[in-house]
Amino acid sequence: MNDSTGITNLSILVKRFCRKGIPRNKRGDLWLYLSGASIAMEKNPDAYQQALTVPIEKKFQAVIDVDIPRTFPENKYFADDQTPDSKVTSLKNVLHAFTSTNIDIGYCQGMNYIVALILLALDEADPASSEKKAYFILIGLVDNHLKRYYKEGMVGLQVDCKVLQELIKREEPTIYRLMMDGNVDMLMLSTKWFICLFADVLPTETVFRIFDAVFYEGDKILFRASLALIKLHHKELIACKQLPEMVQHFRSMCHDKTTLDCHQFIEQMFKVHLKRSDINQLRGHFTEAVETGRYSRVNKLARSARDS
Image (tube, rainbow, N blue to C red):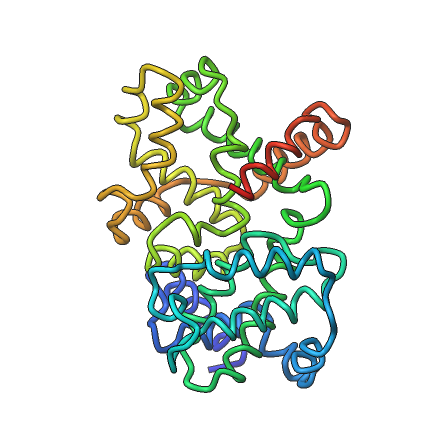
């Protein structure tokens, strides 16, 4: 077997893992590989420890201090920072390190859930090793897929919410018309879907599967997951008669029995046919609109939705 055949076979295996679910005992290692974290760690082995020693701005520290207790309080690893297997200190450390070395972004609410999920996936006995890996995975994830959501102005987030709304128009025209008739703003409903990668929205096992797919196929998966969530609740959404009823269902559908079925959700997610070229074309269109101020109010709405 030549090198190219071996690489192709490995790629096929990784894709199958990422679509069918990476085995729990291999998830951390594959996330390291797919995010580019393993290479970054080799090039900069001391970067994490150095980042921990750099002070961060008080405004970021204040928000982190507020967000830490809010992070999966029902999960035994984050419920109490005094237990031997607690990951609370590791969560604080990774967020500090990232914030100190990414001054163009700093800390954005939503990162706490992403880091917590990464720490859970790594599931290592050595906190120092787990923190270091989580730090580099987060950098790879943000640099490759999320930076546009977190930068000042949140243009990327605003754009992708508009893209999602257009995709709903194509995939679920009846629901789209109801949303337009009720003046439903997708930005208010889906901000957390994007900036948290669904980590504070869907069950943990489902989020692990979404992360698996994002690391391999990129942020296109976020649109697949969003549309899957809507398609699985088509009947309930079109039955809504009033705007408050629809908004409430959008918020509650993330926790009902249909969504809690991980296999059913992921199966629906990959039934959604999306071309990256279509997403990029829509992004180009809406980026121009957002940057020229045609949606001037959305920045305020995005921050409100993110912080809620």
